[in-house]
Image (cartoon, rainbow, N blue to C red; front, side):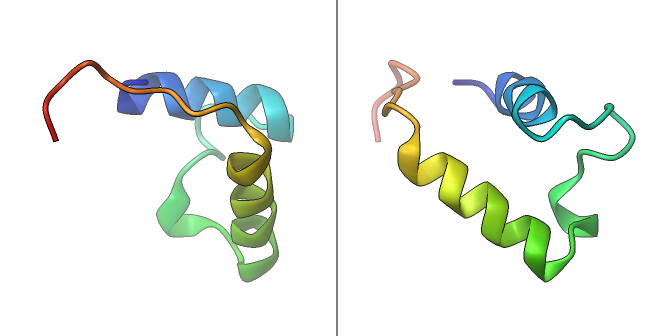
Length: 50
């Protein structure tokens, strides 16, 4: 997934709008929610070499 796709996915999962969905402004609780969501999500690759 591209960065912008991840932010759209997070907006949908967390019920936030674009202005609220910024990792640098998340509380510790919100970061824990994001980590939990990411651990449950299927793995995607961008197709780019690592």
